Amino acid sequence: MQLLRTFSLLLVAQIVSFTSPSIAAEERVRPLDWPIERVTLDNGLRVILARDTTSPTVAVAVTYDVGARNEEPGRTGFAHLFEHMMFQGSANVAKGDHFKLVLSRGGTLNGTTSSDRTNYYQSLPSSELALALWLEADRMKSLDVSVENFENQRKVVQEEYRMRVANAAYVPAQLRLYELVYEGYRPYAHTAIGSMKDLDDARIEWVRSFHEAHYAPNLAVLSIAGDFDTAEAMTLVRRYFDAAKRREAPVAFDPPAFVEPGGPRKDVLVDRHAKTPAFFYGWAIPKAREPENYALQIAARILADGESSRLHRRLVRDGAVATEVHAGTGQRRGPDIFTVFVKLTENAKLDEVQAIVDAELRSLAEVGPTDAEMRKASSRTESAYLFGLQSNLNRATRLGEYELFHGDARLLLEEPVRFAQVTASDVRAAVKKWLTTERRTLVEAHPEAKPRED
Image (cartoon, rainbow, N blue to C red; front, side, top):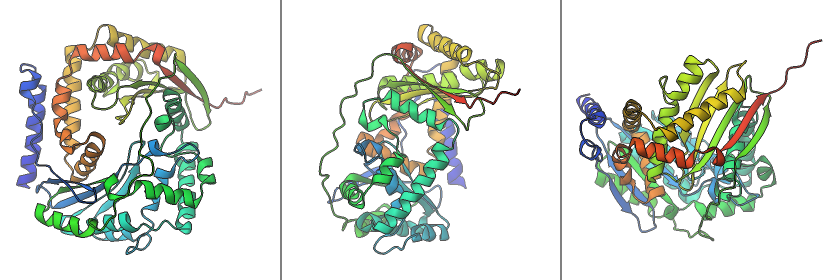
């Protein structure tokens, strides 16, 4: 308990120092001083070790360098399919036993797929580190990519699509936004869920070829965070993962240059699951960790983070013309995306609400944020970052992503400094340059028209 309390106090001290306005950013904020070790096995597997004994738990994550961006036209959804396939058994683990073994020992586990990566993770009592590593190594070395498993999981993914996309309010409009923002850019023009037609048409040999190309130790990062002995952990890692065979992808992934479609773009969808109208704005912006991306993340907080944010105050609290408003970036490895989502009240008018959003964007671009807005946005950004890393599981997954995306997991520790360096002028300039009407994509979602009563 004392160690946990000490860790929490360190977080609070970091936040207090970050928000003090009387000290220059470079003096009041330092990179986080957490011990992180990086080791690469002979087969190319990158191992990240982040030891922290404040809690008697350990998290293990494997992040594979494969996502929707790696999929070929006509073969979308394969990365997400393997998120499901990876729980269907391997040489020494029967179908479904990965879940049973982890849950029966008081752990949690799951996997996720994005455009940029696929990851698998579990959090367990620290005494179960060997189990987590053995399970991940077994499926890395010997996944059962059988016809039976493929057919079964194809149906599961298609049912997930029906539940979470086709029958979910506003989701089709969001996916259409991505298509238009990245129109013509194959890596990001489709989402990780993929096309149901492509899954219908998929052949087992295509699926096996995809697995051979992307699931190998030299194409993955293993990250361990929590209460463990470093020497013992590396002994276990080598015992279980050394035998995993390095594979070279048939064709190295080489993303093309992004050429943005010219002019503003708009689409209108009828959404039979929507109760009220809504709209999405979208812009392509610089990739994650670029200076302007940090400035635009601060802009998103000023626009829509919390009840005192500009759009929430004008649209929800004071104007009562919207029930929800959100803004944010996608944090992609390639060209990133900035989105604004507004869900209207029943009697609000889309053009009037859009005019309010446009006016706030113009104000941010022409006048910039106030000192109070910058202090609040900086404080909330820093606290969200720090408290988001409190759990071993979050640390393991984030460290794996940073190693994979940016080449060094330790860069995660520098984020407080990068955000602290953002000025009001940076925010104003980034909004003025990137969030313009001329570059904007707009997708509206309209409820089905009600039948007229005679």
